[in-house]
Image (cartoon, helix red, strand yellow):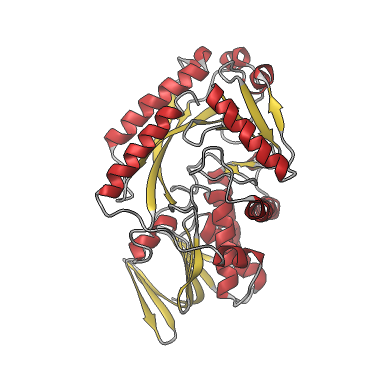
Length: 414
C-alpha cells in the first residue's frame, strides 16, 4: 500500500503522532505498523501514571535539570495529559480509564522522608502545589501502616493503560487511520519518492516515516552504544475478596510512587479499571538485548511478593494473577530522541521510563516535524543534547547492573 506518512510502533508515541496528524490535516493518509498487538507491549502493561511534574529516574529525588527546564517540562507534560483527556472524551472511553487523581511519593524510612523533603523544596521553588501526608493520612489512603509519610501532588492522571491505548487505536481506525498489527518492519529503504517499509506480508511506500519504537530505534541502526535498555517487572493480584478489602480499608483507587526511584511503585485499582486489585512494580536490570528470561522474572516476582506482603500483611493469602517484565529505554543524560534522522525519517523515541507523557509528547513533536512545523514541543526536544555514549560491552552491562543492585539496596525500605 501507499500512504503519506507511515508510523512504526502503536504505543503512546505512535498513536499520539497519528492523532495529531489526522487532526492537523484530515486529508493525510496515515498507517501504523506494529510488530505485536495493540496494548500487548509496554504501552498497555505499565502502571498507568501520567505524571506532570519532573520525574527524573536517574536522580535521587526526581528533580530535573534546573528550575527553568523543569517549569518548561511540567508545562509540556500537562499538554500531554490534556491530550489524553481529550482522547478519553472524544472516543468515549469508560470513566475509570482516565482520572486526575494525583499521586503520592511514599516514604518508609528516614532516607525516603529526606528525599521527599528535598523534592518538596524543589516544588516550592517551582510554585507547584503539594502536601505532606503523615503516617495516619497514608493509612487513610492506602490502608497500610507501612509508610511513615508521603508527598502528594495533584496533577498526575491515573489511566488504565491498555484500555486507553486500545481505545485510542480503535478511535483512529474509525477515522481512517490504518493500523496493522503483527506486522514487524524487517527492512526499510530510502527511495526518490520517500521510503519503503517491508514486513513479512507486505510493503508500505510512504513519503515520510516516523519511528515511534522507543529503544528499538537502535534495532533500526540509530544511536547504537548510546541507549540503555532496562527491564522492569510488575505483578497484579487476583480479584481481592470483599471481606479482605473491608479489612484493608483505604481508598478504592490510588497511585503511589516511591520516594526513591529504585523503590516499589504500588497502585490500587477498582472495578472501573479492571477489578479490585493491587499492582506492584519493582526491580530493574540492564539487558542490552532488550529481552528478559523466565529466571529473571521468577527472581523478580519473589522480591515483589516480599515487598507486597510487607506492605499488606492482611492480604498475604491473595495470589498474584499475573507477573510480567517490560522493556524501557533510558539515556545516560536523560534526553529523548525526537528529531529528523534522515530526510523524511523522524524519531519519536527514548522515553526515559516516562512513556505515557513523554511518548505522547515526542509523538506529537515528530508529527509536527513531519508536517514542517515548529512548536513549543519541537523546540524543547530539538534543544536537547545527543544521548551520551555508554561504556563498551560488556563493561556497560556489568557496570549498569552493579549500580542498579547498589541503588536497589539503598532503597530497600522504599
